[in-house]
Image 1 (cartoon, rainbow, N blue to C red):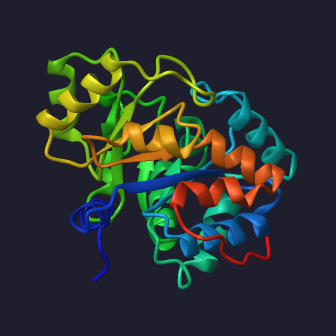
Image 2 (cartoon, rainbow, N blue to C red; image 1 turned 90 degrees about the vertical axis):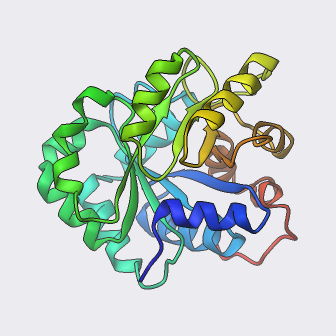
Length: 261
């Protein structure tokens, strides 16, 4: 029996390591390149891989990821083609895949049909940043009985009561957003952010991972103190676009590996 997303993260932590989840934009450079990138990140040792679905109005995305999405859309990438590609490589990919998508593409696809296709593609997690907790019943009933965890986000402005509400409904892990704004860019993470992360960790039973604005390994290490790991998006997407594999490999603290990307 395959492990759930939560179990994979917890196993990493039990081994004394922090979870590291890189984000990539599906179709940036073409879906064949996305296949190779997933295999490459798996080889490096990613705990899971967050696969972004390109969308024309990505309200949570900063300029780097937004441009990657536009490049992917220009390649003709769409949700149906991405899911077909993921199903095609599922026998080769043991690393859990998490889809990050806005609600509109799911509604257009058909929520029940999407869940069926995502299950066939062996997707283990789902992040929908523009779907508030109160609207999760739009898709939650279709996810029952699957291995797909509906991951919830907690913002810097979330109150303790709100964090508890989110924690009770969350699956997989808690995605702790570390900035008020969009993804990307180098940020100075002040003490109040670190304290906020520790408060989230102390009040939930799920693993807690921090994301948004983490642009280098040093920041990733600092942000993961006291929590279970980090998610890095813009820095990975930018490095992939520039074919700067040294920068990517620095996040994994490993010697460079051979790649045919």
